[in-house]
Amino acid sequence: MISSGWMQEMEPIPEEGTEADGSEWGATSDGGTGKRTMRKKEVYTSEQINTLVRKMSDDEFFSEPREVEVENKESKTRKSYSLEFKKKVVRAARSGNISKASRIFNVSRQCIQEWMKRRSEISDEVERSGGKKKRLDGGGRPVGDKEFDDELLNWIKNLRKENKRVSRRIIQRKAQEMSKCDTFMASNGWLESFLKRHHLTTRRATTVCQRPPSDYQEKIVNFFLFVEKQRRNHKYDHIYACDETAVYLDNSNTLTVDEKGARQVSVHTTGHDKMHITVMLCAREDGYKCRPFVLLPNKRPIPVIVEKYGKKLELCWEGRTFFNDATTSNFLQKVLGTSLFGKRLLVWDSYRCHISAETKKKLKQLRLETAVIPGGTTKFIQAPDVFWNSPFKAKIRQQYEDWMIHGEKSLTAAGNMRAPPMDVYLGWICEAWNFLSSELIIKSFRGCGLGPNLDGEDDDCIQCFKKGGEMPEGLLLLKKRRDDAAEKEICDLIDEVEIEGDENEEEREDDPNFSDASVEFE
Image (cartoon, rainbow, N blue to C red; front, side):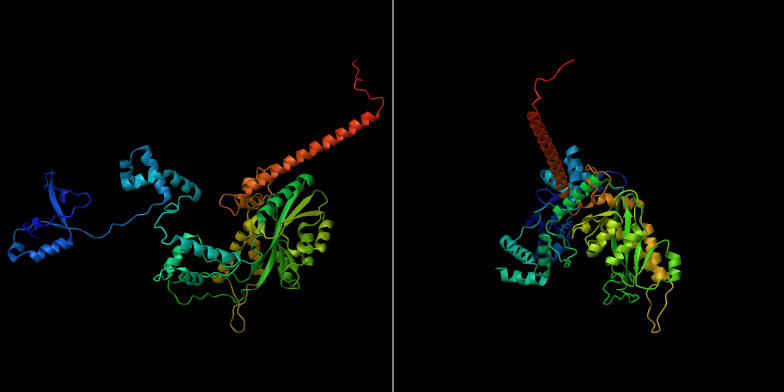
């Protein structure tokens, strides 16, 4: 408590919501009467209070006290709002008023006024990105040295164009060399902000099979148009899709749940991480699923296995786990066979044993036509890659985990765990293939441009052309190319009609009995 005499020597510091003289009016309740009275308070900083205490004598210090409120210097907590929330607040403010929206959403009027000024930009960004961002592009503190920032970004892009490796440490060292500021340290915090600002991240190098060709959009559109033309000309009764996939006998994932900060994270496995078998999955456009064709590592058939799975799986006892011309021909014969009635189209990738001379000869014997997906585009338009393999392998991994916890396992003489036995993992394959529904199979054909409609009605179902897909602009390109092809076809028909008309005209001129006035009315 501080005497009022010394207070007259210093002016209180006014704060937001106070009177100009530094006083603040607060309401207090008067006992149980329910009446409220106004009490005037003055706000002083802690520095002012310390100065007053030093100047006061003992008598003044112990004189009648006067209530003084010391200013709280703690900063207010800043809040951030998503663009979707801002759009909602602006809509409410425009339908009512700013003050009402401020009370409902607990947001200051100044913020709402700023959001209303930029409501068109906020609305566009919400439609484009879904509204999860918290500020528009260009928001936040501006870059200190824009020229340095752009120069470093161009240096990184030029190195990546040459397929050179760029690590985080390389960027930090180059930034220190390029910076004109002696105190610039290129810290990890600066690096994180730089990468986030320019949408850069650390990526694992892709293999050749993962990298799409430079003109992959054109190749995909051309493939769709080629398949449509083939289907119109040949009127196929059924369309098949197939693909090989590896099933590993040890599906131990590298991720596991453990305590935070653990120095070592060990995972118990069977020790057969690289042992696998190969399965050829094949299905039809109407949802029918063919029996999986399994390449087994044994050369001699096991009677117990044949009896148990002979009617569920096509077992190939070749002693190998990869396809060649012979195993591919065996698959075509056993799974697809010969069709005496109807035409069939098989869609698969450009694996070498799919396009070999021996395979083509076998296809001709089986009266089976093929459409080969362009190399590097299978992850976009091959039904097994896009729709089947992920749930199929997820189901196998689930069964593997159940077997590791509850299944019966055998050990070697040295005490090491053996790999899952054949009857166990073949059961996983049957269960996983049955897990895929017919609806998913039908959807996969539509999602890869093999739907029943040939007039473009299924174009919106193509997975890679959807909004948020790998190439949403490909849908417009496909429609444009289809319209151009239809226009060209009409022009070719007109040219054929004109040529036939010219030939008939020449024949009439050569005929002496022909006359323009030879029409008789009866």
